[in-house]
Length: 188
Image (cartoon, rainbow, N blue to C red; front, side):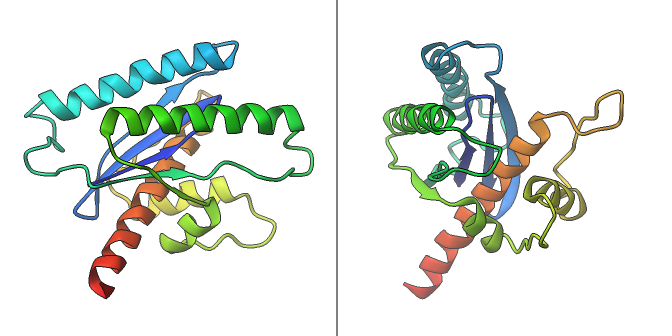
């Protein structure tokens, strides 16, 4: 079983893939928290809930008896400025939060997470983003076409709710992790 995270200081996505199939996905909305400490506290609470569901709920579709957690993949944080999208302060905060969240994940699950870039994850999942198109939109449309378990909630203006993109990214991270681990098994 693979857990994938798309860590962000606004909305963090999480997804679980077992036997190559999506079995769980959700998001953690951190937008209402003002600083990295409050965001970390809220993230930790949700992470503990996730861990508890995995440990205790035998009715949950991915209970630990059938599918042990083998690997955890986290989308690598940005390392460079993207025109009009990021500032030094934003990158610093994101990197700080990503590090704290990664440590909490490691400490709780006792599995060293592996980091994967968004472009590499999309490639592993068979997604090609045409020039000029937004990657998040392409990923969302790909999952809506190809992943029956993935559902999107819409706003009253018929736009995907903001957490849809983070859930989708986490699914791609988890699926890429699954593909990587199975390539390693087959080649090893």
